[in-house]
Image (tube, rainbow, N blue to C red):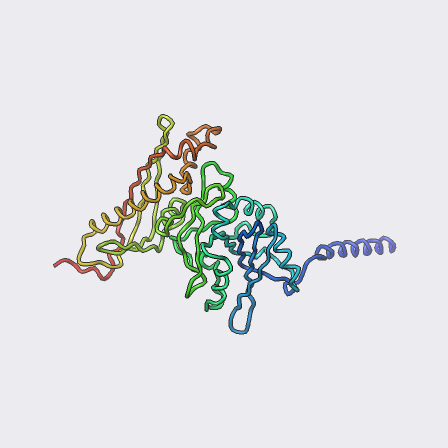
Length: 358
C-alpha cells in the first residue's frame, strides 16, 4: 500500500512537470517590441516595410519608426527583428498603410500573405496613402498629438471615426478579392499638419486593385449601403444644415430579360441645426433629398464605369442569377444594371434657433 502511494505521488509530479512545460517558448512582454502601425511600399521589386513603435516616456508616448526592405514583407520584418534587441511581435498591428502606387498595381499577394501567416490579426485595418510613406511617417512623428492618440483612432467608433470614413479590415478585403459580387472601398490618407493624418476619400478596390477614388461625402452613402450608421453626419444645403441621426434602407431587385434592376428607398431622420432666413420644413427636406440623390447618381456612375461593385448590389441577385453565371456579374450584368433610388427625410427636431413666422 505504501509503495502504491509513492508511485501515485511520482506520477502526479510528472504530470505537473509536463503541464508546466507548455510555456517554455513564451517570452516576457519586456523582451518583445509591439509595433502598432505598418507601412508597405514597393521599390525596385522589393517591399519596403516601415514599423511605427510607441515607446512610453514619463508624460507622453514617443513614436519611433524603423525601416527595412526585402523580397517579401516577412523578410523585411525579419531584418528589423535581427537588428533589434527585442523580438518583433506583429499581432498588435492595428493599421497597415499601403502606398497608393502599390495599391494600383494590386494588393492580392499582400492580403493573402497576411491571412496565411497568421502573424497579423485579420481584424487590422488597411489604409492607402497617396504620398511617399517615408514622408507620411516622418510627419506623423513630428505632429504633436495627445498621449495615446494614434492613426488607428481614426477608425475606432469610440474614438475619432466619422460616418463618412470608410473602414476596411484585412479579412474583408480578402473576402472581396475572391467574391464575384462584392468589392470594397479603402480609406485614403495623407499626413496632417495638426493631426496624425487627414482623410482624402476612399479608394475603389476591385479584385484587390485600386481602380478609382470616391469623395468622403460619397463614402457616406457607401457606408449606409453596407449598414454602417450615418449617425452624426452634418449636411449643409442652401437654406439649412441638418444632422443625420439615423437611417434605414429597403431594396427590391428584379431580373427582366437578363437585365438587373433595383429600387432602393433610404429613410433618414434628421435634426435641423441652422437655418438661413425662415425656410419651411418641406423646402429643407426637398433640398436634402435632391442633394443626396445627385450625390448617389454621381457615385453610382463612377463605380459602374469601373465595374466595381463596392455597394454589394450583386449580393442581392445571387438567388436570381445561375451560380455558374455569377463570375460574369461585373462584366455582363453590372454594366447593364439600372438603379432607382429614393431618399425620404423625416425632420425629428427643428432645434431652438428656428424663428417662427410672424
